Image 1 (tube, rainbow over the protein chains, first blue to last red):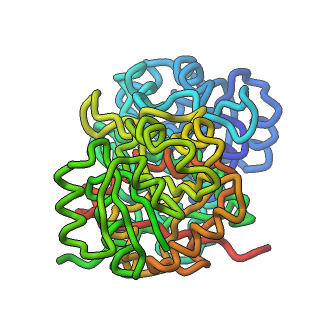
Image 2 (image 1 turned 135 degrees about the horizontal axis):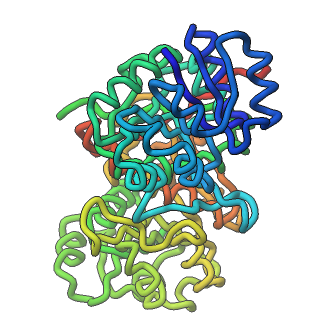
Amino acid sequence: MRIGVLGTGMVGRAIGSKLVELGHEVRMGSRNADNEDAVAWAQAAGDSASAGQFAAAAGFGEAVFNCTAGMHSVEAVDAAGSANLDGKVLIDVANSLDFSKGRPPTLGIVNTESLGERIQAAHPEARVVKALNTVNCEVMVDPAIVPGDHVVFVCGNDDAAKAEATRLLGEFGWPEERIVDLGDISQARGPEMYLPLWLRLMGPLDTIRFNIALHKAPPG
Amino acid sequence: MRIGVLGTGMVGRAIGSKLVELGHEVRMGSRNADNEDAVAWAQAAGDSASAGQFAAAAGFGEAVFNCTAGMHSVEAVDAAGSANLDGKVLIDVANSLDFSKGRPPTLGIVNTESLGERIQAAHPEARVVKALNTVNCEVMVDPAIVPGDHVVFVCGNDDAAKAEATRLLGEFGWPEERIVDLGDISQARGPEMYLPLWLRLMGPLDTIRFNIALHKAPPG
């Protein structure tokens, strides 16, 4: 299918490349059409890859990934434009990491709101699904690099959109039973607020290629 | 050893009972010396169990657990009294869950601060260790009810205090390799901000007796 990827950073490039590898046509969007990272990525990624402004990427895609830095995501999605997002699945993988107070970063949107909710509220015409924000981009697109039955989360207001996101995650390598549906988009507060723990686990685990698995007691 | 437990709710009673079962002497503390839950607990728990005000429990203990509701924990630790906490390990298992805005609760202390930090800042004479706040109290005191290599976290400014907390967690059944040291007390923001995800996992998992395991990619 045709997919727009908003964002030219590590996450956007990882997801864009994986989608091309899977046989999709991908347009990477950025603020400026001549963004060097996006142009270089498109050249390297081959004939199915192209680059353009946010609006061009969103308009091109039948589905859209938001891979922009979370503190600028609403602005980027605004630039993508409501007409270009109308009725489309918008998979939001971003985190509102705020480095202005030092490291580790705090969250710019937190506790009584989430980035996923803010994007959905600003763009009711889009069908926002929060997903994949709890793992590094290498794990996002190749979960098998981490052993075991580790999980990711989806949430959103539109069940068909979540099913479509789940299908795309399946192409990345996430088995359906390891994709946990948390409910509507307000549930994005959960996986987004997990980030501060994720950031603090990198040290003890000595890698960014990790994830969590869920274990529960047997019933009774 | 002699241990003070601040708080008479499910968490305080679970930890108090486990400590008695392990052979410790436990005094449960509450605002009022005649707190019905605390008195009933002490009567049921046997000769090694007693109840009193926060100050009496803290003064009795060689180590102290904070099991009060997080929104009232600073007040409870204040009532316990600096002289009664001086030099002691204070294991803070609480979460600042704020139900005033409905369910699921938000966090009353979040993002740029944590409850663990706030308690440590208010009581520099105590050696605060944040621990166990990421699991239900049944799992806290009996981790074997959940299968697999699931983990808990400790953090605090005093290494010897963390070692003492780790030893007590070991008595509860947590093997040392499943107790992840995140660093100083400011790292409490990580496990505290995990709570919103924890709250949202109860539904999909259909139990509160669950926990997370960490999986990582092999080096290279």
